[in-house]
Image (cartoon, rainbow, N blue to C red; front, side):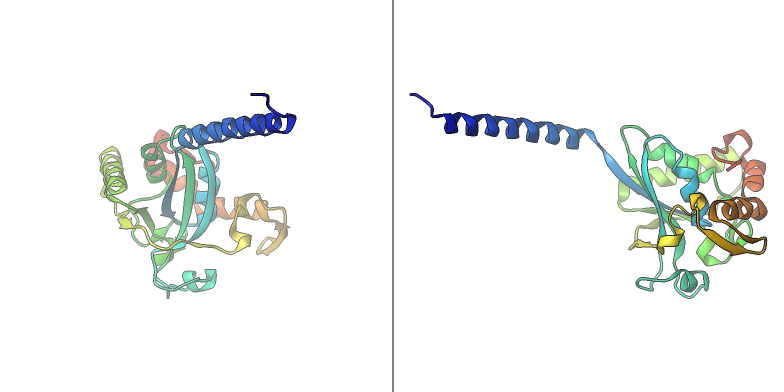
Length: 221
């Protein structure tokens, strides 16, 4: 049977589309994208730390674990919502494992402190790991057990059921590298500089180094 030119064009187009869908399907299967939600005190610092990790695709700051819907930063830090300052880490599990991220998280905070983190006090600054199923819970509990063994002190960081995660206000996202000028007790300075002064003044890295020594993955900020 003789094919008309238009028929041949349609056949070629169909084959090309099929090949494209096949490649897309293989790529989708190959990319094992997962999320990990943790609370480690100031979310600016946790976001800044984990965005450096190879295999991590995105880190966003937000609020979770409480009862207030669509909370604001002022509400959360005021202690009336039950929410934690938290981050949601999106990562490629083929490049970095959940176990590795959990180990890094526990060694980037003071998991012995039940009252907050470093200079930030109050419930919203407590540490926590949030899990969505029994498999994630098992990995988180194993990470806590190993960290406690390595540290030689009791760890109070709880493993909690995942709850609604609310994105923090836009100005909190990537705060550590912002170029806007903000008013601080040092006067108006660039946001990224304000972050560095805050982190140093809060004693985060000093305390993490004191606790974890060479195991601390980010101390030095």
